[in-house]
Length: 264
Image (cartoon, rainbow, N blue to C red; front, top):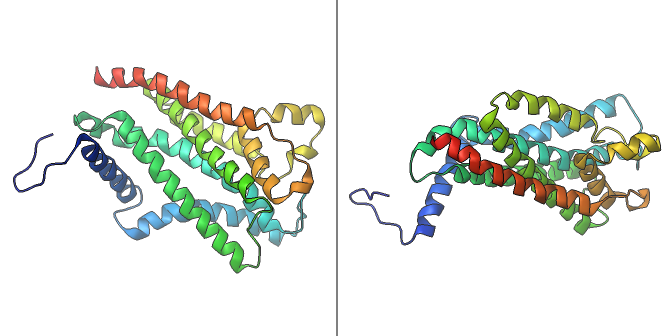
């Protein structure tokens, strides 16, 4: 990488890579909703608005919740892991589309663009989680789970699954650009069937059996089991973990072919 007059040369290739990664992350934060702090604030608050609109609708209609007596806690505990998964898996795919011209620079690789967006989405999701927790505290809801370790594992699993599906989306969109619309439609189906607005275990056994193959549904149940341990929710932890890790592996293997296609 050429060194401009008056600049300080990076001490190592690792430091140079960190500079590239930092620049890509800043570009993501500044370009998606305007080059300002308020613009990035919109990115953080967007999923929070989704959660609280859902809570408001069910509160005004005075609908009972399947577990407990707190509507806000029930919906937030199911929506947070699902939204974390959806935002990461979608935005990682969109990063390749919006930042593809940057890969023409020899210092920037496709994996750098993907990794930078993953880090941005993890930070954004965590900030959104802090906002949700703060609002729940303000309205008198206790957001602390009965089993914090289980809740943390569910949140991390949502990140892993989001990265895995997002990586596969990158590979697919490299060959079929129209998949951006296709995944948007699939996301709606996954969200509706994930159990954010209802408790899937109350469904008939034959239907619930097939619904359990949706790893997003199990993410919601995993998080809810941390808040409602008495509900007896059965989660296949190995299935969710292996689904996420396998998705990452498959996605990275296919991305190699996407890189070759972009370089051609």
